[in-house]
Length: 484
Ligand code: NAI
Image: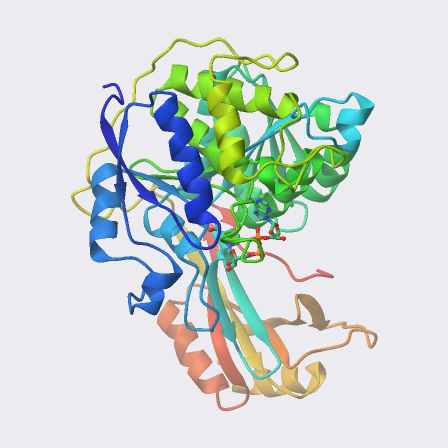
């Protein structure tokens, strides 16, 4: 199917959102982009009108019907009860891959452009899981806990997307950024899936770098990287680092891609300090729009608009936030008009890849029911339980009290505090919080046995949560305490 006369949902957003969206749509119109726009109600003013999720029911229906949301930045109302509409939209509609492209642009001076070092890096960030699940609890007044879920299927979705994109768009190398040396199970799973999947793409070089070293290398040798795929939080940080390499967030388009719904947006916020003045830079939203056109198979229009944008910037036209300060800046509308007048021109110093004029776009079907992503069956054996609890006592005393309450079939293996073993053989130098973990093991016992023991122990310590110790397909499936 071609995208001709396809309808997409457009949310102009808050602050500078309407100004930059109008500018971008005027460029689309001038370039003859064959899309219809359904402008929908979404953002801060809709929270204020009492819509708890920041959008009208019609807006939600429109996005689910069209499968494509093109959005301006939106403000999240302050206050503890309200979750970000941007994050909620990405998660509810399963846009599992966040793609951002960072490229040196002639006319945007950076230390790298001055040194003649070209940058062209695409960061693919997992968009749903990780600490962004926002599953957090205060276990006491002093101890906060965040749960970090990484799933095999979540890793597969985003890593598959990275390799497929690399294959389709001619990239030669995909790098996995991770911290599997410390988070052996969560980041370890991401890395394991990465190399499993890499085998299916023998023409693409696959390598991995620990994320802290990756940050250093990106700053020192940015030209060595093509595509980098990461988990959510690390990807968030590395994305902004890369934005800094090419002149800031204003030049870094972002897309959130899922199997059914995809969201295209600028990465910057609503810029309340300059809203309503018609001076905002529409480049980031325009670049995201160009990525959307490519996603929809409108390759000719994408290339024409990208060429005109880069030509305009290269020729020195700039809004107030970038470019040569010694030449006067233009406003948002003038910037858009300059791009329109340059349609048909191409930049001198950037080679835009030659592609066909159209590629296929498959409008997704509405799923009939929620999908449960089930993996290969595995044998799970329970060998114990980690019990997390609050106590102001010291480890030696706690160990005695816990052992006295445990049935003969169970053994207290260790006590940890903030992940460090403090009993047996703890160090007097280890400073303890009031949040402890007790590792209890047994043989041939059931969950019910461990729950019964937990109920008994709750009379000695304040139990806040439990996690079973599993052996999965013969492999230990839990971490060891530090010092073990
Ligand atoms: P911001 O990105 O809105 O502004 C940071 C600075 O960059 C400001 O000085 C602003 O004037 C400037 N700036 C941003 N975009 C610009 C543009 N296109 N042209 C020229 N200058 C630009 O970040 P801030 O102030 O932290 O957030 C403001 C609001 O935006 C918050 O309510 C936040 O929740 C929301 N936000 C929304 C996002 C989204 O919709 N995806 C992303 C980030 C923030």
